[in-house]
Length: 128
Image 1 (tube, helix red, strand yellow):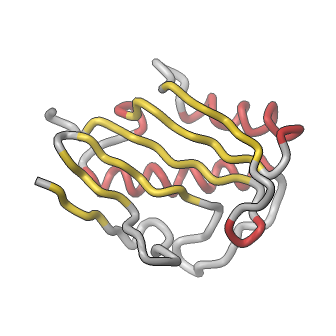
Image 2 (cartoon, one colour):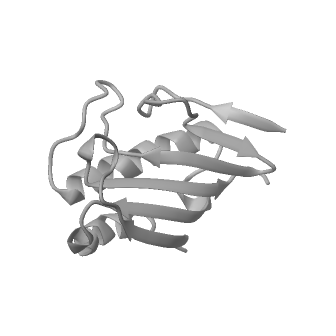
């Protein structure tokens, strides 16, 4: 069984996609960018500020899926500038301090709305 997930605690999808899809005990989350869920506006600030907002958005979607950051098994981080990797990684480490998931990090020439960072993930749904 496949179920699409949507929550007001994270930014609404800005295209024809779901915030997440749960299937066979896994939650597949679409990439989150540093949008404030209340206003739909980009959070201003450096890579650390933007990465924290992205991870907070992912956390909200994970909770709507019945999962959590502790259940994430894989992330993909897209950076506008790989020179900001260390600063992003400091923030990322605070959110994944225990048993961090597998991860790929790539530099992307351009991200939606010209943000500095986008992250997507796959997580196990609680109770599975």
